[in-house]
Length: 135
Image 1 (cartoon, rainbow, N blue to C red):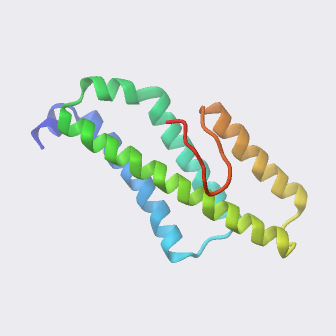
Image 2 (image 1 turned 30 degrees about the horizontal axis):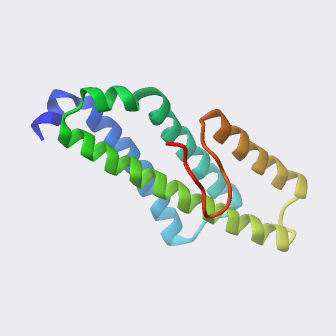
């Protein structure tokens, strides 16, 4: 714990990554979300995970103690797992909405395009439940 006081920036990112994963896990466990909600959650995970991976991850891993590096890896892995679960939930809700004609096909296309473009900007990919993250 002393390491977290010495280099608090690592502790902050552990908390951020874990909180975003926890929010997603809670949403998915409850199962109370529509297509827009899961889309927004996935976009948040993309932003946080992509921001972490492209801006501070390298610095944190260089400066952090081994204990902090381990905690960062666990938190980042948890966030990536939450993102994969959110992508699967998005795909499921998308298919439901499409089958039940609950949403305008143009709106579906817009959501899909936004997911692809944002992921591409962050060096990641989107797809079905077998989502691969680039981080």
